[in-house]
Every structure is written in structure tokens, then in C-alpha cells.
Length: 98
Image 1 (cartoon, one colour):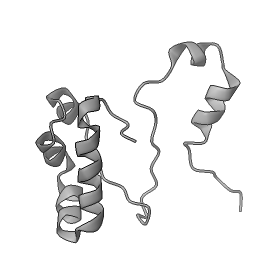
Image 2 (tube, rainbow, N blue to C red):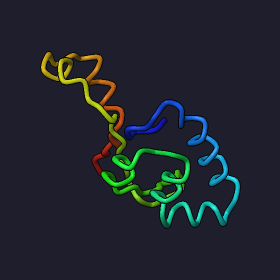
Image 3 (tube, one colour):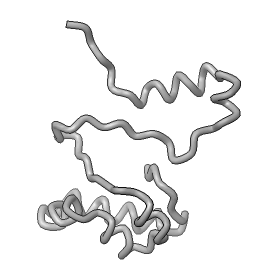
Image 4 (cartoon, rainbow, N blue to C red):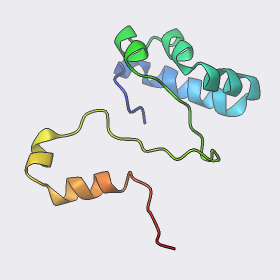
């Protein structure tokens, strides 16, 4: 799921881009080097491609990453909604004591 502002009409193009990058090593390498240019090519709005510094992270990457929702629900945060906060907590890597 995209965690940045995008037009719903671009969702299919985004899916095709991700699938192409996952199945073609040369596209994957180029996509990782400059994801914003690929996102511009499929029609993501300039305010998205210019506002964010995109980085492609794969499952086998040694880089730890956290993906937050594009928009947090301010009302649920203010009301300390346990279900909502619990869902957000699942987005963070678990830390284990040695």
C-alpha cells in the first residue's frame, strides 16, 4: 500500500511499477537509485515527488524501516483510542532484550 499522497487513479500504475521492479533486476536497480523519477513517470503529483525523499527498502534489506500511515487520525490520537494506537504500534520493529 502506498504510504504517501497519490491519486487513486494511479494505484494500478503504481502496482505495475512495483511488479516490474520486483521481476526485472535492471529496473529494480534503477528504481532503487531514483524512485522519484519512476513515480513521476507514472503520474504521481509533483507535490508528492518533490515533498518526499523516497527510498526503496526490500524485505531482504539490512536497513530497518518504519512505515507510518500517510495521515494519522488526530481525533483517535487525542482520544487515546486503544485499538488505533495498538495498530500503529505494530508498525514498529519489536525490540528484544539480550
